[in-house]
Image (cartoon, rainbow, N blue to C red; front, side, top):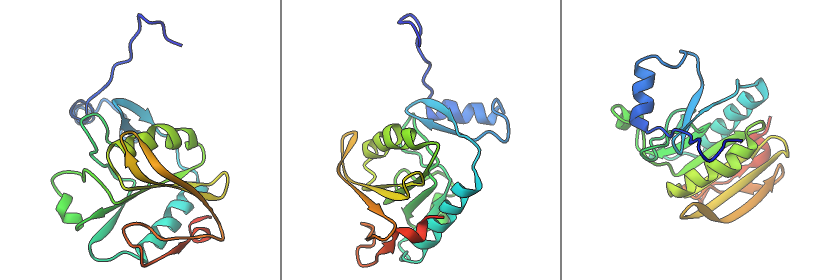
Length: 185
């Protein structure tokens, strides 16, 4: 695709924010910074939005007061990545992050249909590198939940697939379980 003489420019979070502050990006642009690359996200279809809402409701029903849910909001994972996962369960309260985005989460969920390759490859590697203990991909194509746990370097040591009739207990709340079908549209 590119010759060896060509190099892609990687951006830092500071540069990314500076460009946003200077209104270089259109106001309605849906962008994420992943490993220094600015990635444009496709518009959300209603099927995807329904799955995000259902997963949020299911996870909210088992939350303790130690955690809260952020929906499609930034995580400041490192100096060159600021993804906006569909769902992030983070410790604390919303006002704890008034002046800066969270730098970690106890669970990240990506609802995936058109972005399955991005979510399985780049984002999985990113979340493992950031030591997010648990990463879920709600796979709308296969009507399944891909669960990744035990981050080591840039990968997860544990991986399992759950289907609609299966139950799963998130690591942050092992005494509770959710049914995969309740998150699927």
